[in-house]
Length: 413
Length: 113
Image (tube, rainbow over all chains, first blue to last red; front, side):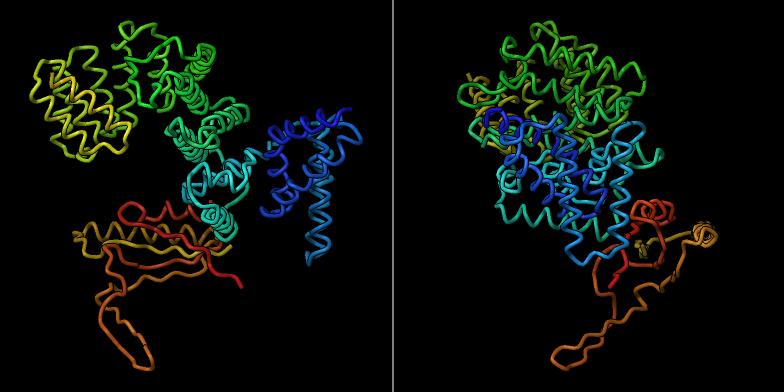
């Protein structure tokens, strides 16, 4: 057995088993810090032992037992009373029996997901704790990914864990009647995590860009653990579709390229196919939801060979249904874009003007930017220029300002 | 675990007599339900903040002043102390409180030494 092989086995086990080990220890000991520390020690011991003794047949089982014994030892040496120790020992032996059968036992990772993504926790805390406990990212890595000092992230993690303990947030999968709402909260966290990585620029830290991959990994886990939840499938599909277009999304200068202008040969076909298959699987359940609809819209774009072949009529129908479920002005703005593509810019402009009158999107740069685009296509150049200037004032990032400046210059020629 | 539920609402809101009666009955139903399930430790409805008085002592000087401490739109109108298994149960009960529909119900675990 080569040392390199063994080390590689440990790092593979880390990717696949970390969350499982931590989730299990939290249930057995009820102590989040102890769970993390003992999981860490188990992996350190694997690095020591596996090169010498060989890789165990069941690396996950080896790690779980090692971490659990470690936790038991540490609890015995501290001031934990006999009752608590006996309770832990009992849980351990019960698990031992159940581990062989693997029947009917709920995966601890599902409990962990629902607890980390409890809506009573602040969203930044939910995201950070999920990355720490389920993905095994270190505090330093999470801090780098979110561009905050390590100290800040360490405090955020501590505060979040304290709230779980102090507020009495239970470690369990919510009851059926609470599940739809609580699952939505989990999906929000995974989508936020993905978007954080998606908004990273080409020059950003690798760990930041990798947040997309972590979000997809967690969405896959959720689908594996809850295979009958169409919205979980919808989210995974949506993330894969966004991610599939990543290579075409920025040009060599790191500027945003619109969907229309992207080089579609750069898109990841295999990922798109997988996403479409997942979407079909979710749609068959006939329980539509916002993530499935967004994925369906993204799929319409992803399967079109060229922008002209996009099925805009279908996209408008999907937006109609989405705006019924999620009646926000942003969804209606996106719908206006689809309507403009399906029926012409005049129809889109009328919808945008309605939104302008309502005033809810006054600070949102994409409102004037969209209007500018419609006006340009209608040949109303002077008004288009005014709208581009307005959009430039509101644009939040340099990349967006550069894009709008380009358009403004084009409209001025 | 013990949780306090603070009922916070805009006390300047005007209600017709009929509406006020309906609301009162809704609170009674809520309370009776909790009592019969053995969840209710105690509860109090409070007078509006127009009846509140603030007391402060700074370097030995006593200052007594009229009015609520915080100038927020929603004021504490009453509270419950509940015995629950965990936060999820407390949140579920909070969502059934009539004030969840027109104000805010704040759920706070009670300090245990």
